[in-house]
Length: 615
Image 1: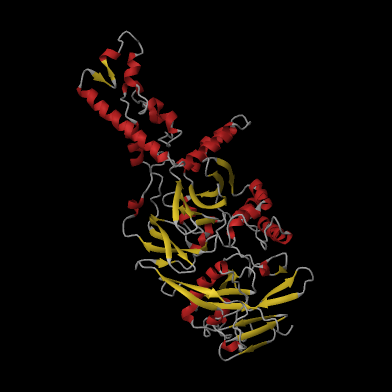
Image 2: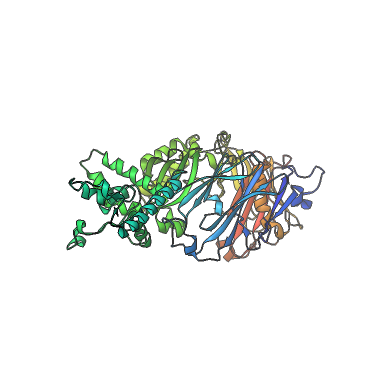
């Protein structure tokens, strides 16, 4: 992304070997590794591109970027469905652009107005082969889009208020029939010879059932049948105490309002605690929980617990989701405070994982985030859960994907984390399970497939570097990588220049041009200084080339030679610095982005030099 976040720069990765001619390291710069091919400008002035969002399609021909612009209208204007949230004050207009890598042209776009979508780290979307899903938190819906081979985006269907594609058509027909009935009622009130759809010649006054025929109709149920119908449609007012009905007028003496009138009343008061409108997918969830409680052989205890906790489940909202395959979604439901509040506070809050079949619209299973059963399921099938988190989402098996289900070292790390949570202050078994399951659902293309980060090949400190694209706290000393088989130190990664905060571990030479070279056993880690204006450009564009052009990095390039922290600054030494690592799928090339409070961002290219002297 450009510095003004208005354009996308597409670079071609030349390879980790650098220029073909023999040149000293002090003369290397960004252009020796990346070649600018295209620059795509977003036309709208109010839109700004997100620096934390860039996805590559499964065929490797297109990238998907996101642009955000603030909404000018009120939040209430964006209320699409009765189940939509009205407590989010600041809504945005989010536009997803599909850009072709070979030409740099915008092929298609999809716009969502007055919405709340989590753009950072691809948390609000999921990509599986040609399917692209977007989590619309404000509308409480999941929009599924098909990306064709030519990059065009086609809306398949939206899951939320409706489940099936023809649900809206069925309800439209229902509304038409009720409008006809209301018109029929108006005619019957003015004509003594036509009463509620029955003429006088059709009525047998000797028949005792004639009165019932005057009062009943099919498509606009009476209040006596509203309870049965409401179980499939909405959650209407439920009295909190039986004393509310004391002294009420008998039902037989009350007129029977139409269903449309009742719906209008419930929509006008849907924000009241006992008048919440339930969406289609929420109805599926409540029906699944009811059947599970009803079929439990415990003397009705589960059913009583379901009725006691009905309102708590009805208040859950969809939070995140991911594709497990082309027909199954993993949806995370949580409390409203967790979704619109601080993400750090939501790790240990109660949440529920729902397996949803897109084609049959059925709930397959429901687990809470403290379920030991779901933790065992995740440990056994972690590859299936994290399949969409790698560069190419879909059916292709990843070659270097260390998960707790296929790697004993990754499983051992997970067990150590759980043990620490169980014995920590304010910890326990439930907190340990929640900590292990907080990574679900996985964000697309958030894990690296580099062999240098494979736990089966190398051993390293996972507190400072991992296959995830999340930030890690920096340390002053270099990151060491050991071979799993022999335990031999294979190479190091230096994030800072020699003579600054890290003190220059190993043989190194500090050059006046801002290039710092640290040699290791068979590898060389160097800092190449560039202009700070390319800081934002290099970060995201290198991420794009990582996946599309199969370019991965193991070199250190510093974009700002003046960004090194002086060694005498004790306050800065005590402050925290964070780094994000972007590794090439197969080449020895890694990008690290170091961020420090009130300091310019440092971009490093870590590359391998085979002629380096051993330690």
